[in-house]
Length: 526
Image (cartoon, rainbow, N blue to C red; front, side, top):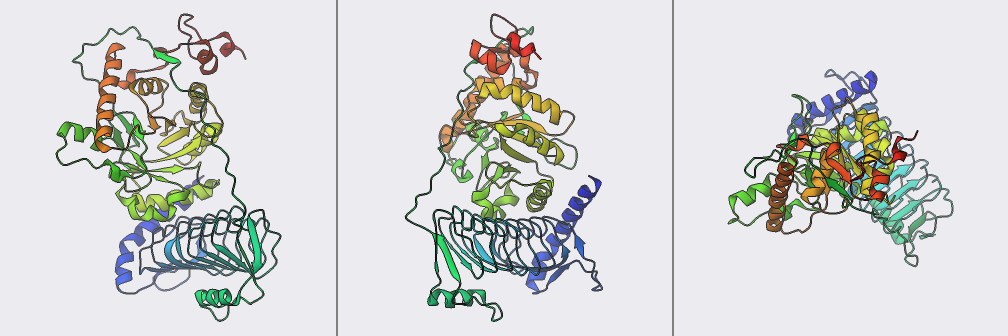
């Protein structure tokens, strides 16, 4: 573990030192070097990851050594050369970088790229060019399975043999192969390269020593086949089967002020926590929608402006930017203005610990290391979520209920509780939940009583004024609930305040059945 932490810290340090020099070097047309001393002596890097994310236009870097994952990701127009090998996700989310890897690259090279040119000179692993929407990925040497999987656009050129399932799930773009190619999967057509295409592709490659011959083949999507998508399986319930009951505390008067604030990222001086006025983080696709009219009442305006949202684009300075496969190439544009990060693992490819570290180093180097960060995973993988969150020191582990398992909200509560106790106790990681519906004050109180710190949810409407009124109403109703329970703070809620209102809810949740006032007997069985 010490070695891993050392690599992560070294990687952060390199990115931090480069940040202040990139613009100056770009103005002077200078090349920054990683892996050499100031005197020019080679000191090859070994395993550093997440290096040089979001390279701006005009920047030029050269690195020496064997690098880890997520190198030169989220690029915006820089030039990057590796004199050595690269790990997985080289140039992922690329939006303009020109990247050259002089030796081998790992899996998912060019993943989700939008534009730019990535050249790999000695072969690549599996899933090269997966989910790319544009740009050029050229590979000399053999390439693994599923090259171009799920791609929607762009051009992949391979001068070598490819593995199984080339182009699996592709709906656009072209894969040019000068080598052995197995029969493509359903939905992918194989045809000869035309003379015009050969000329155009060689012009794009721009290298007389590396030209595609006329007998190369082209893979592209077969329009006659309609892709079949699995229907999303939603949760089988909601929280209506759970009620709230007072403890021994007396009811509070109507004028008593209640504390409903939750802090995310509270881990000492090194982090800047985000305050949630309500223990929730609603989701809105584009935070531009949160702009209120100029004549909006100040109190109403404050209720919206102070409430953090999770969003995929244009975050405000207290919003969490959601990072998923669909917006990788846009991350660099808005990540620095966000208040925190949320990585949606239900959308991104499965990653091992080194790859997750590489992604976190790259993103946190761009966003600011002090900002809180969270990860999302489905309820069916709750133990994996909390194990990863604890290992990577994540601030918030968000369990997504709508993950195709169909597990209800009530049934998820004991799963989350047991995993919290086994994996998160004694750590700085808080537990969150993501629902497939918009919440009311009762939902917030119930979930907070189970120990969940933040409730992520859908919004009931998009209009900014209506959202402000919704948030204002949630605060008033939640305060009423707390006063009725005899509490002045949401932190006073616990499982003793919860009751299952019907037998089915008691059976799956382990909560005390109202009237019976105990959990059902099977919850005590070994």
